Amino acid sequence: MYRLVCVHCGAAYPQDQIIYTCSRCGHLLSVEYDLDDIEVSRGEWNRRPLSVWRYREILPVSGEPVTLQEGGTPLYHLKKIGKDLGLPELYAKHEGMNPTGSFKDRGMTVGVSMALELGMKSVACASTGNTSASLAAYAAKAGVPCVVLLPAGKVALGKVAQALMHGARVISIRGNFDRALEMVHELCVSHGLYLLNSVNPYRLEGQKTIGFEVIDQVGGVPDRMVLPVGNAGNISAVYKGLKEFEALGFIDRLPMMTGIQAAGSQPVVRAIEQNLNVLIPESNPETVATAIRIGAPVNAEKALVAIRATGGTAAAVTDEEILAMQKDLARKEGIGVEPASAASVAGVRRLVEQGLIDRDERIVCVVTGHLLKDPETVVRQCEPPVEIDADISSLLSVLR
Image: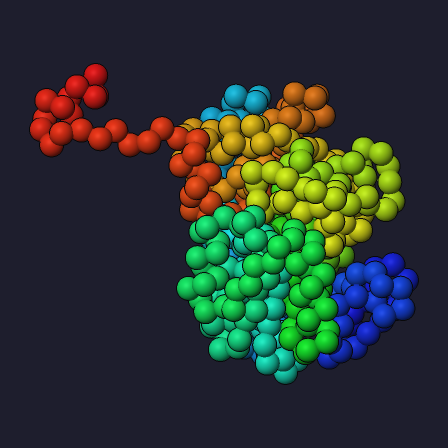
């Protein structure tokens, strides 16, 4: 059993109530389980395939889930980059290997499943790209209409293509993501669509399984987990899940939760550096990493708790650092990620340079989306193909 609980005032709501934020104080909600009633062993979980649904006893869905076989993503040992940085235990959890190419699929398998359980007939979101691609696919699988709001001209083409192909009603607004989120929230409340941005507490339940898989793949608790921060749902979700693992007795400590933002969009970093309890939004966020181009993260309140409670930190990296690490991951490790994903590993490089990471730490970076999510950025930073005449001498001449 579980209930929805306000993270600020503690007000509780029944699990069948359609609500996104606390009606008393307006703060975020969390899904809280009666962990004493959960009967499951690690051995039982380990007999199941590595996936989101391996951990179904601490997920809210009671019926058959809407699934595209998400989760079970690979954990790579970054041996070459780790050697460059003097970090022999540096790893990357590649969430771009999910069905639609990002970690959002973990949240949508749970979120769309809950939409059906709650009797909702249509779903909606605002997006910088990956959320829309994922929701459109899971809505198609569930057979429910999907509405997506995007900031016009600010979303990578690969992500727009996914939402369109999966049949979503895609609407671009002349405004930024934060305004799109305000509009879709209002639409859902007034017209009965089910909102599946990360303000929805059920969506974060799926995303917390990233942390569960890391524990199972590493064979213990890493010293640090590093995540890109946009709307701040992922770092919040992973922290919540690991707290549940700790309460169940499956782990005895938590990793240092570390959030990385782009220099042009870093409200969480500023809050950590200035020891603020309330985040100051970025009015005009800008970065090549479109997935984290968010100035007013909905889950900032939860993210600040996650970072501070674990002795973690937050750092900002420039677009140049992000793109350099994207290229390093591709050319040194064979791992293709979109720019926002590379931010986590770029952040590790920055923290090493600042002397804020110990060389013997076991570090897991979450890389959140696939290289093909943003092909335009890839093409812009790479040399174009060389065109030659169709004869062997021309081929040999360019290979010299």
